[in-house]
Image 1 (cartoon, rainbow, N blue to C red):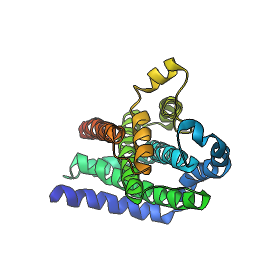
Image 2 (image 1 turned 30 degrees about the vertical axis):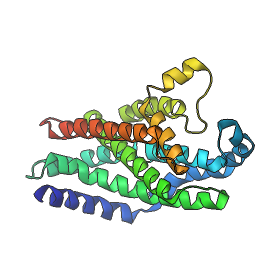
Image 3 (image 1 turned 180 degrees about the vertical axis):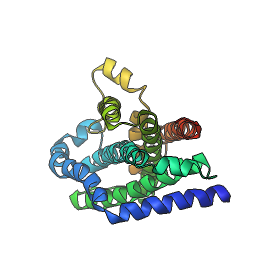
Image 4 (image 1 turned 180 degrees about the horizontal axis):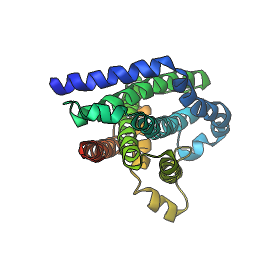
Length: 249
């Protein structure tokens, strides 16, 4: 209970800061909405090529994962600013759990991502999305779990680097290959070597799982994507916690 209370205190402080400038929630939605409006219609004639009856059922899950990646992967910039202002060191001299210091921040990123994901899905219905209600809930849950993992990773890298000049190119070098190899815009089917490389990227399986569950299908693809979402989150949370616990982090 003490850990939950400490986590909530950190979360509440971060929430108050975020509510003072809610524009960031809207800004985070701009890119996926532009893709939805400008790129989505181009997929309508191609949906049958990829075995889909509805182009947006194929496209929106990818946009959710894109939102999960880019909506939280750069959370470390805020942490660097807090470190520079002395907030992190002030928190570290308190008896609060180092894990709570991390999870309180990640919880805010997860809540912001949840709101953005719901808005994106609701807007997608205006463009013609047809998806299972249960599948949508499950898909958003996987998105939030992936986003929480990205936030843990970003905060840990931010605390280690303590510099935006180091953080920005590092995160960009990670996010771009992941974006291209995950099949976010279109499923990767050719060439074979690229498909083989993509198969080792966990987010590719998460995208495939959300696409499957949006159609109301709960098969091995969904469970495999769920497995990788849990593994990625667990790995990022463990590493992030270790970084926050280090005396000289």
